Length: 193
Image (cartoon, rainbow, N blue to C red; front, side):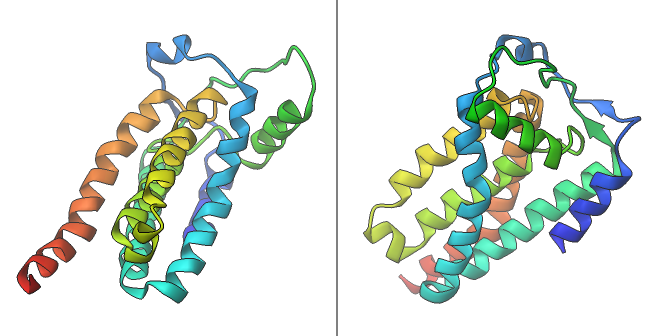
């Protein structure tokens, strides 16, 4: 559902969008090396989905509700309120593997439909699932997921794929989703204690 909506919105909204921007964006440098954590987002979402589906069905349900509600609501916002950003560099000083990867991402994912950042919402889903899953907590993977999630969130602005405003809007969206998806489950756990 998300992928279908995403590709439809990507094709429909290419021009005539509200520009997502804060003056803080001008102070954030472009750093091509952050394309590596940026690209980790898709495989991590996939791997978390597979792992939880087989090893922690309870957390899988909450994770999938968070991802579905978060990403689909972001697409709906973009559909109702077309937005984009104009921060991408047009020329690069050097041409190496990292710049090549940035250019591939720029080609595959347009500069539109950026607010709220789906990368940030997805990182929140990954991190919360790690903290909620007993098998992952026993391996202390939540302490890997948290800095990795923050690194991926930072990468969105450092490779100029998002404005910092997109991140700032995605944080309260993720907080609301946390209370909707996880707070109810937390109340259930307390009743059993």
